Amino acid sequence: MDKKMEVKKLINSFKYAFEGIASSFKSERNMKIHVIIMIIVIIWGIIFKISAIEWIVCTILFALVISAELFNTALETIVDMVMPEINEKAKLAKDISAGAVLILAIASAIAGIIIFLPKIVERL
Image 1 (cartoon, rainbow, N blue to C red):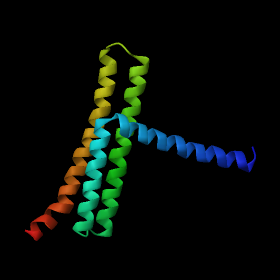
Image 2: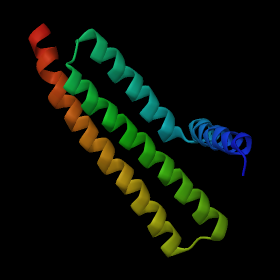
Image 3: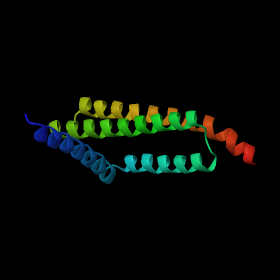
């Protein structure tokens, strides 16, 4: 395979990945919620001048929660595709996947409280 084809394949893989993210954002309410919360945290981070380490923690948590939501959406889409009728095991798979996202979101919220609460209290 020549270099031009390799570059084109690489560009297409990024294009498809961004299309997947955009599709999830358009179709999934929870993805919109996660992105809105992420934007709020970024604004708070700027306002409260969080440290580099705190930015790193927030960035990793943003990536984990958004990625988990993308995996959850992909899994739910596959389950719906292969099992269009109601099925207890399909429901279980979808519920477990959603639970994983919830655990990450709760852990991220706790980390956010640990980072931001002292700064908020200090301002009061």
